[in-house]
Image (cartoon, rainbow, N blue to C red; front, side, top):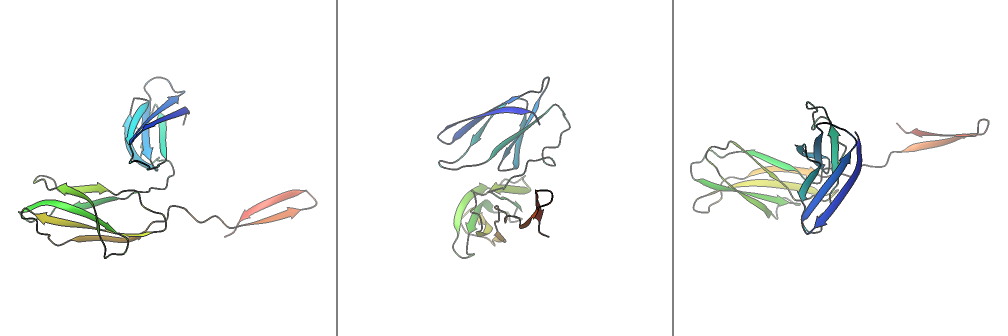
Length: 186
């Protein structure tokens, strides 16, 4: 689109992004983190909360089209996180859900604990940044009011491939025209 400048300021875990657009009138800014849509604003600044030492690709698309679809038109990105979703437990005594992650399917690390809310049907949790070329498993464990674990929902395995293989190509030189031709291999 027409972003002419981007300025980022990071203090601890807070990253403030300010953009300049050449558009006039009401401008809609669509903000993305690692290619995943975050929010639409009419303000040209947005604050992201990144963990200490965490790096991410911050992108913004500006438009005057109020009907612009930010999901369908998202910039290319390599999402370094996954959004895990699950449906509530039907048990009457569930107090919370423990969200766990593993790289071997046996040793689990707790990512979060999500409180059970009686009127909520679907839950979601975003993972921490994931390592490229690593295989991950996740599980959602319902925990009752006494602290007992229920039957876990296991998601995965999923191998994370964010860095695509380089394309294979051939190079040919035509001495009559002094031209080099690059062709991507099939």
